[in-house]
Image 1 (cartoon, helix red, strand yellow):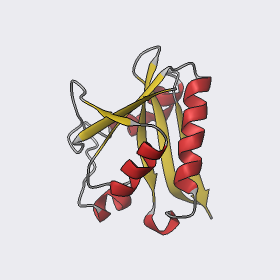
Image 2: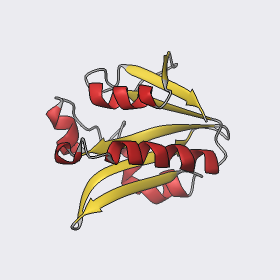
Image 3: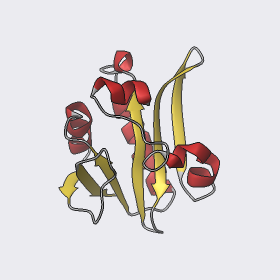
Image 4: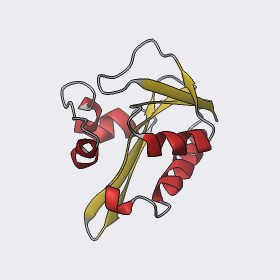
Length: 134
């Protein structure tokens, strides 16, 4: 995650924005969410999490893909899996926060039907939010 963010001049914040990954079991799995990774030869190359916000709404979080694995269809695979998993968990809407500098990611989100919206709050490294119905 740090490696991917650093490419864009963004930083992790383990005390606030990234505190949820300190205990994936509690914050994702035990909370009716989901967390996935893709490994290559024992090294994590991508991740995404489905974080429960309410009974009907989840947030797509921690969707990262190392640069050398981009352009190979893994982002599409992760997005499709995230949408299927979220719907299977009973969510009706998925939201996400991102930074406008992440143009490739935003392009992927738009391709899958996400639209901009104005949330009550944004995480410290994010400057836009998107949502879509499931």
